[in-house]
Each structure stands twice: as structure tokens, then as C-alpha cells.
Amino acid sequence: MSIIRTHTKRWESVPRAAFEDLRLSLEARGLLGWLLTRPANWSVRVAPMLALTGTSKRRWPRIRDELAAVGYLEITRTKAPDGKIIWLFDVYSQPSRKLKQ
Figure 1 (spheres, rainbow, N blue to C red):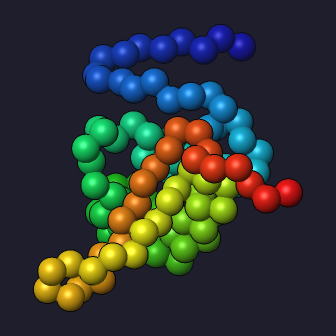
Figure 2 (cartoon, rainbow, N blue to C red):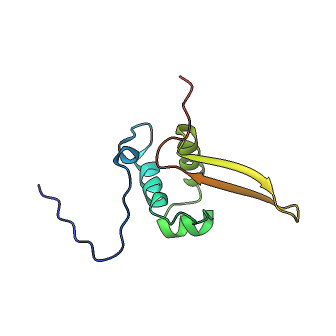
């Protein structure tokens, strides 16, 4: 079997290790791969991301928790000046911390 690649549009390089991390489901690896192709200054906005990736609102919490548990996603809760709660998501191409074993 051959893999034939034709790059007609912009493309991104994503570390293979992120796609081969068996601690993650295939669905979580796919969403992680998609997130890693976003520009560096891109803000994760959940509703548009789910619409663009075809991920259901029911699946998102499981995928989010899976990525966070392994360390590819860090979630921070903060407040805006007007008092609204804001969730900040930092996405990493490799786990950001050592896991407790």
C-alpha cells in the first residue's frame, strides 16, 4: 500500500507521538490533531470547534477530560472584569506534565 500526498493548500506538521498515544481514544487523538493545526494565537471556542469538527456536545466532555487527564489540554477557570466565568484552554503537542503512576 502506498501513501500518496498532494499538498494543494496550507498544511501543518503535527508530532506523530500525539497520534500514537494509546492512552487516548482515536476520537480524542483526532480532535487533538485538529487543534494542533490551528494557528498559535487561535482561541479555543467550544461551540464553533464542535461544529467545525462534527463533534457532538455529548462527546465533548469525555474528549476534553481525556485530553486533560493525559496532559495535552490544560483548562483554567477565571473571571472576566464583568464577573462572567471564562474557561481558558491551552493545547500542547506533548503532555504538559508528568502523570501520577
